[in-house]
Image (cartoon, rainbow over all chains, first blue to last red; front, side, top):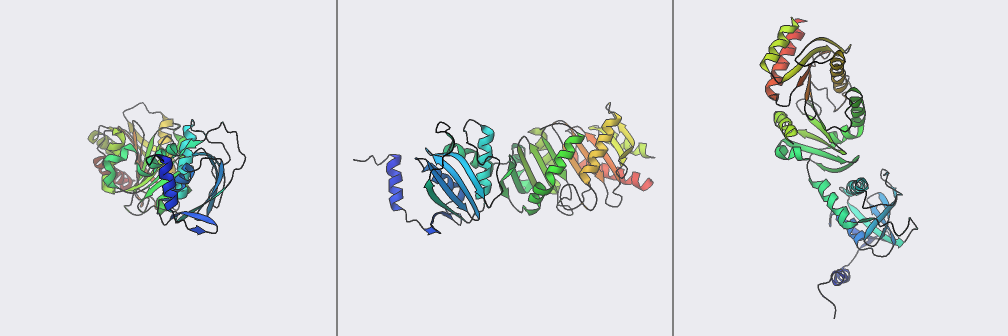
Length: 251
Length: 120
């Protein structure tokens, strides 16, 4: 008699009820946001017990990952999307930078994806079985945080913020509002500015907030806050600059 | 004629520690007023940061439109740079404590910059 409350029973029941659709031989796991692309991708990893290579197509990008034991062991390679420094490395749950980096990468890859498909292939030999990888539970927590949370200092003045681009470890992890010009600042200007600024006032990794009153047009300000490995580029109500400064110094 | 304007501004805003009127085209501080022992190198650094952050008129360092006010806040200090598009080489570089009344200070500092620029 099966235990109807066991996770295995629930999973088998769900599998039996599924009526999957396929595209180009790959199973569609997310279509127009249902379920959310990142959730669907992580669920596939969570369903992988034996060692397998999962080939995800996220719109035009193809991501090959090694998964086993319901863990992401490695990103084997990426095509059709900006490469990531973590590709080809064995992933470790004990390395917070690695966990944050892979979470940010997956969040960015899946952001606004119209369709995600998966193919399950035989395992590609990689690393040693003792290198355990990162559990889906661990991958889910920072991803949720990265996509939802504003930096602490902006929470009291959230109503003054009209658009945001959040970056963790160099990758965009979340956006809100009209972000094209903000993304351009991050993509094309921030690094050069940051390096030149550090040459003038060398304070490595010190938190800093930079506000410019017409950055996005006449009386359309933008600001950039850098806090550790997190950067947020945001547009705000020009009349609230004093409140934003107060919040910055209170945090 | 510049010093009295800087004195007045600093008197109005005790949280303002340093004021420097600078020519961004030559990156030179022309006159300064400070309540802290700021060195010449410190003043030059303010001028350099102002010039770098505003950027050339046709190519702002950040954003797509030249700004007139830049505020750079760190943990214990606020650096405020002001200029006008009409006279973009004239800049007022200010260092303030975090408790400065930002809106009032920027408004008064902008009026101060205009007086200095007009007098020049």
